[in-house]
Image (tube, rainbow, N blue to C red):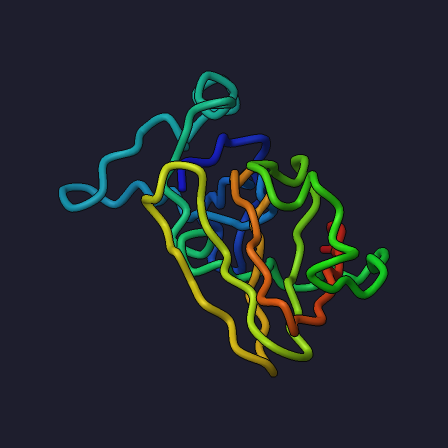
Length: 154
């Protein structure tokens, strides 16, 4: 998944880590001749790259960023109580991660463009939901499930 650079931090070895909009970090090392990122060496260079999209492999694996804490939970849903909005393409806003938890039955998780998924989650099962990832759910008649939300940490 493509994620924009929103800021920077330094790792323990002094290398620049781009902070992505999803909450993950992405090392931006300048180690010629193998890694050429001279823009990391100055504040002006780093500022020029803010907003640039990078491929986030941790988002591709639906891994929630380290240190993020649960902020709220949806009610438990069934096939008859699931809100219509969840059955249609939707996403979580930037800065919010989700986790679909299936307690009974099965829930199919589909992406808007079909590039990722579908996944059929058979209870008990969980699946991460990245910020701004367009998706929808399709529960079986015997499904019971919930969405847990997480917000940024360290």
